[in-house]
Length: 259
Image 1 (cartoon, one colour):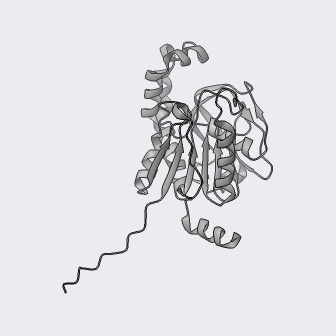
Image 2: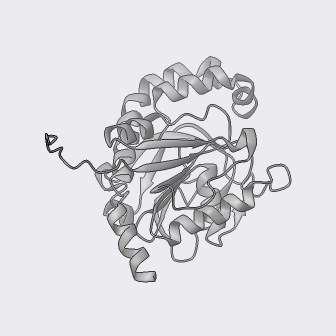
Image 3: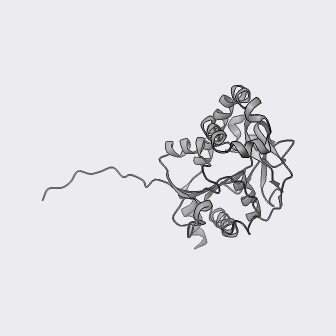
């Protein structure tokens, strides 16, 4: 018998479920960080078919992206209540969860907070302040006291009970929060690097013209020249920090403890 050569043990790649609430959302900086970590991404395009992961066992982490609907639009987006429950199940199991923009509003709803519709309109690159808690939190600790990042939202939310506020702005007090070890919501679009912003400009010019009249014609290029490089760097730092928190050993330990 000829024995085959020994092969080094290779750990299974982390599996991340990404919920796309609106077509062509784009992962941007987050895609780069997940690729660096060798993660496998499974897309769930609920805007198209409403299909969500059947349970939490098939993925190590959950990402919920933005969208034009509100977190309370159950009538027009009937998958929303189940998505709310799904985010909570992932979080309660100790798995890493990330909600961006609408995703953060859905996450806030999942943990019992209130959504405030039309109460916080921001579009374009804005300065975000990091709280004292945020300066020592793994997600934002590399960014100092403030950073510039892309915003696109009209709604906001109250801080869920037990959550830690990590970042704030004059328009939206709750720009980022953490629940437990690795459940994060960011109202700002840190994933929206220059390539994603350019894609959004091409894909959604009518929507942008409606919510930010004149921005495309008069401000987009100047704002990009001023802010895009720093925003891209901040976004990638945040993305890498969150991906580093996808800890399957932590999840396994919690699962065994609850068994």
